[in-house]
Amino acid sequence: MNLTIRQATPEDAEAVAPLIINAIGDIAAHMTAESEPEAILHKVEAMIRGCNTRHSHLFTWVAEMGEAVAGTLVLYPGSKAQALDQYLIDLLEAEGHHRTIEPEAHLDEWYIDTVSVSPQFQGQKIGTRLLSYADLLVLKAGGGKLSLNVDVEKEGAIRLYERLGFAISEPWTIIGEPFHHMVKKVSATALI
Image 1 (cartoon, rainbow, N blue to C red):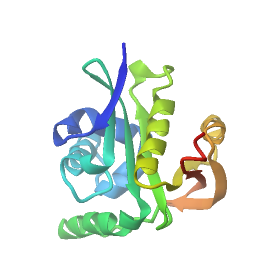
Image 2: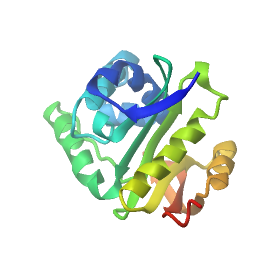
Image 3: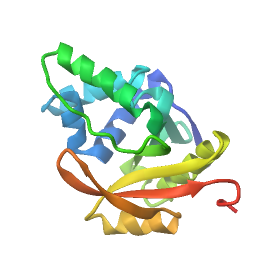
Image 4: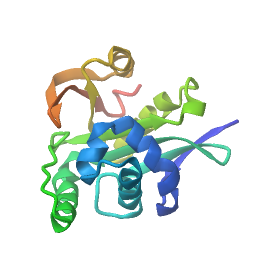
């Protein structure tokens, strides 16, 4: 069966939200100010349906095998991160929750927030295809730096990202946890 990758739509929220939550773990509870799984799920679905957060359908792509959602990619320019995060902070403040959301990328980078593959489709290189698709999206936008953060203990993921051209550039902290910030240059010559 062929894999297709397309821009997400608001209607993808129910299929994509669990994949995002699975990938970002405790960050989902922090950014929703919720502790119950169902409440976290509903808020992440609302973020996907909306236009003003980093997990909006505008920054999300869906990998499909047939009619099934096999995986997802969330990618946005670092230059938009502050505005996207401020919108979420303001929403949470209106609900009575004070949250800070740390930047996850530099302003001059395109940031891969999430790559997640549905369990029934794992082992088919869909995650690698989504990462390659991120390269193409950055290239179409004129090229530049592509970055991601990876938990320092996920050695297998680090090796995969290194094989795909990423290099550890610096330590990073997200909600008090240590990550490696990894970057690669995307240009027509870099992809040859």
